[in-house]
Length: 165
Length: 170
Image (cartoon, rainbow over all chains, first blue to last red; front, side, top):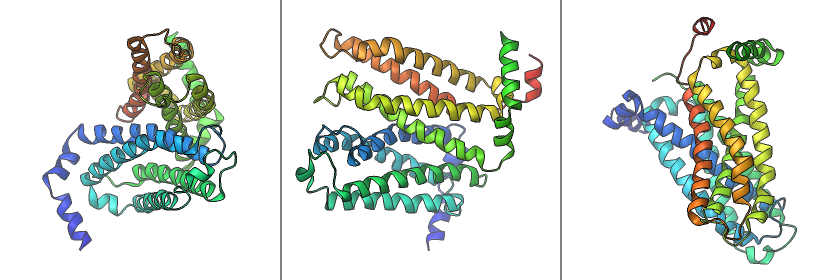
């Protein structure tokens, strides 16, 4: 079923355009990679605050409020550009192991954020100004950092492993 | 000057680290991932500082406080980038000598670093309103432009092919 969808996608005009156009893929990929460079710094700084390493004097709720819009915005751009890139060669991407690994880890990263927001994140007022952040927050930060490193490594791996279109 | 630069590239190419990384199947991607991760952190710190400079975000704290938090990460990631970049460069230094995308990248990198640690720093650290919004925004945009130039130059060099033989003829 899914294979049929990928085949259908591969045969659309848009997929053809992404593959045939000289500049479409480079531009979309450049936006994808450069947005990542903006996004990752924010994510690292937020995780470092969750670990209690930086900005210790600043309230956690404040840091979250300031960083989240940029994190969500950056993430949205990455999803959109990622989907556009995928459309260009759906079957090749889907059959590349690095791609599947990256997708799984992206889902895990999303779950990590959801779980954090549903649990320890909701009680942030309690540990807002604590010099030591709760264990659960630290776990969320370490999981986040680990996943992002692996996601980026897998993303780079895709470029190496992808068969030519 | 040109031959001095070429000699440097040839030397890097033949260095033990250039040879080792070039020969290995996994070392290049391994170093490259550090380059990418450090790039991510560096990009984030540059954006954070520029958003503050343009008064678009982080309004509740002073630039001095923000800079104190962010600067170690900016400098740390820049160092990782320079080291990993040099290692990657050494694997195909002679090809890079003839690659105009790479040359542009190095030009932007030099300008960005000099700019950041001189004019930019001088304007960014003052919160007291001595610099009007127009100047602050211009200084921030120039910073983003120069650093983006490095990134775009880096992206472009993969699309530009040079042969070593064309370099010898220069």
